[in-house]
Image (tube, rainbow over all chains, first blue to last red; front, side):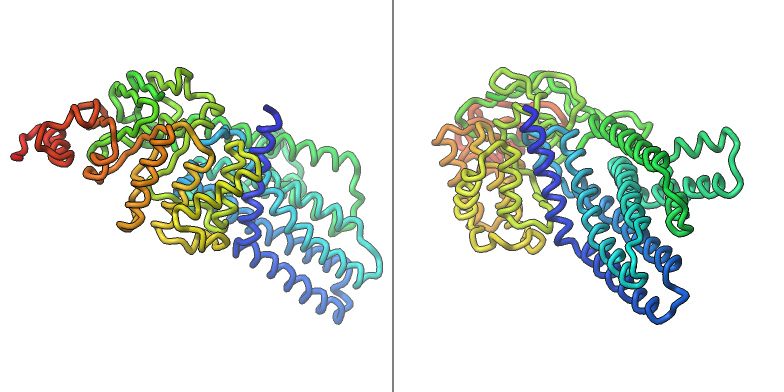
Length: 253
Length: 245
């Protein structure tokens, strides 16, 4: 029984990966990431002042931005089209529960985006090592944090995509993201009172500023911070997936 | 085989809006090894009934039994095959990839999937586009692919919602012969269609539904008055008008 359940989840994830491999948005994101990283490496090689800190900052921001856009459009388009065009029927009329479909899709999206981050991240690492003659370990941590952030982003997008149309999902997600980022910025900049801290904890906070600041300003990344970020991302992603599952369970298709 | 008793379904029309009743106590019985024609004008509730049977509409009142077992359990759905009206598939996948995925989800082993997929793609004239992405397919080709996936795992009951939509006359003829072959092999078929003369030709049993209520149900031969074809009978039953034969 458990084997069948896992096989269904794996098969649905595999379909998402196949879809991603041929999706033009996916290929465009990877191509643009490569081009921009290589261009910036060339400029940094010529201009001494761009090495080290600025290279790390710009390349990590670039990776974040490209995958942020990719996640929004890939997840929203795929889930919305599945329901609108009714291709979801072919899965759900078989021995597949809605929860299995949901988890399979989520893992498929996350794996596809992770592969893209790892491929373009490896390029950043190689370029950084070539420019500075040393491997910047903080960049590796940056990639790990970026993948965690994507886990949360995909779970929020999954919930919104099952509830709203494509356009509303994108607008609502951007609103949530900028609201949470503003709170995060305020907390770093001026500290926060109890109410704002509570809001910050409950909002799907992506901790973007925290880890980017650490990497860019070469601050030490404590094990306490890593555990907190992992725990936070895991719990929040799970929370959004459970909310999606509850919403999806009673939905008419 | 399939028994639907006192089925009531209401559909949601948006946040904070009351549900609109669609089905008002539908009763049906689809007998084993026969072709059951499920007919009705547009908006009668045919697709809603089919979607409820398939578990796509989870909130309903009444009972749906397949071989005496409730259909709420997804594992019961192994016994079902379904092809929707206007089939759409993930556009970036090829027919073989789609059939492999759906065959796996139906619990078929890999070697059998390959054999069955090749057979059905050949039968429905899709063997020349095995490695072509579905986004390049015409409506009729997608419809034929939908039929392949509905039949490849050898289900006991096949539910077809307008299976000949988008098919050319040759395609329609292939499907008609295929359904008769499946029936001869013991498969039960529930078919919803507006091509009433074809339905009359192949269906053993009929049910006409209108505004969420079953108007008539029974064997085709018994239901149809002498000298009247199904189109005339359908119009008569639905509009309540006598048709001059």
